Image (cartoon, rainbow, N blue to C red):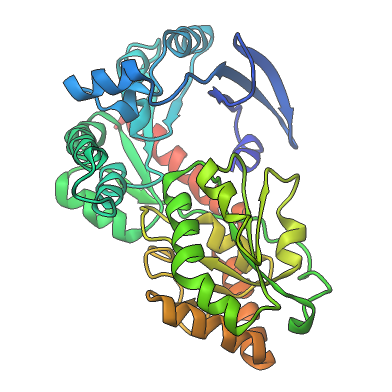
Length: 381
């Protein structure tokens, strides 16, 4: 997305870094045009101080996690260094910086990019926890606090971006006057499908994602505990490969089960897709749309997903992927694709064609830039 926008406008990126930096880092990222990049040290999230402050309110811990003096200083410096037409703010987590942006010279237009509806995501997470856990109560309270901020975000930003029409309708029901545009998640679809497309060469069930993210942790544990034992017994030649950075101890422990591999951080997910029989997306928690589904389809790998995992995407069950919301359905779908060349290839090709025709980043970036122009030009009306 940044590459596509930087071809059309001068783009400055300000964000938190997960690398071990102690002060703000300034540099350039080379695309077709250079992108100014400023990184600020990311604070420790869910610290005891933030958890207590989130308990007392009014700001939820998910906002406090990303509210720092260092970020505010850099934001003020950048906004004061040159006139900006527009600021795109990545989600409700950055809510506390709205006053700083609003006070910037030239009063840039502000777009909120809703990667998902955060209150919905947190509420779904809480509903998957045991009612006896204090974590469930805390998560439910956090969802309510976040939900109270979301209408303010809709009202104070000149425009909003969401990943799917479903989310647009949910948010419009809350704030009918808000300007909300669907700009879907995307993927790079370049070149032919890897040569090794034959199903018989593939033995891995791949699950891709950041493995310190609660929704991915829940999905990996669910698959390993509820689906894998029966599937491994029926097809001991297959492997369940969990590919993703920063796996938590409970995810790492899954690697001790027969047939399960936990890779940790990898240089590229490409080789894992090339070896994949299918990509599994057993998500039970989430909001927005899932890049992992689009990435697998773009790589020519059939996807088996829960309905929630495919939520918001323009996919048809049995054509572009297979939906499976019960362990037995997941197992049955894997076994079927492992033995049916024709169905395997049909779903692989249909998914690939959908990714190329609707979800390629180049087209999505062009659509987003057109929306930028609309938002900026509306200033003078």
